[in-house]
Length: 305
Image (cartoon, rainbow, N blue to C red; front, side, top):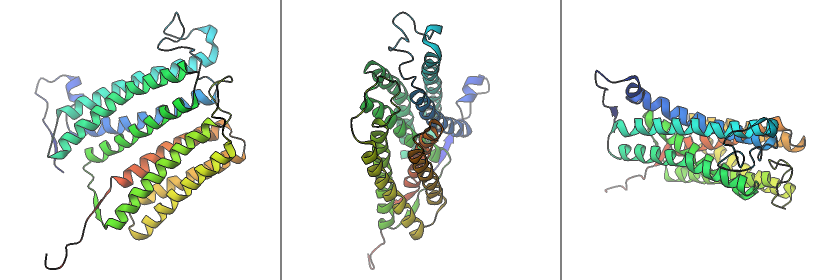
């Protein structure tokens, strides 16, 4: 993969230097990944502190103000603070996009980087709109789940961008191994989706008056756990067939995440552990995406072909 960028002109401003060059692309790719993981955690804090309706409307915080005020108390501060973080993400996404547009890339990498950077730049405001809908629907658990899942998509895209910016090549593997990697990737996504159903059935609704899914949290948690164990089994099988840093990293994240998940379930969902579990979910998606993007199937040539 030939990744090169045009050097800035001699009279380029500091802003141009900020979005020019291979190093800049790497930095913004990492910043995008970190920021999208961070917003998942801060969004979780909003829900876990029952501050989901701290600003009771959208796009304004109240009917007559765009910002929080003392009457809304600590919940208003927490919710409005999380909304402000969206603007930080937008700035990072725009600077990442500008850097990607200025980069000179070879072949499909050029189109891929530009498309992914564009998708991420559009994904952040889309997240803001979905976040607004969650407020307007009084934290409907299914809309909240969509809000979370879009963040997972953005994390996956950010991982691809980081790998491309660092010129990390895909390792050629047998088609069977590639298929197991894909199955593990899918299993992890199913586990994450089932995790949103479990969360939507639990006590942390984001506001004391918000509705729940109405499903049994015990049943949801057990089904969610099955999907997690399938993902771990797939990871262990990949490790046995083809060792790599990516698969070791994924297995380590999965083991820690299972430990946190079991602990929070049996301890009655304490806020600290639930927050850690949200961080773990983000890291698990990042790790499984890294593994998925690290391999490519290679078919053996037939004799005499």
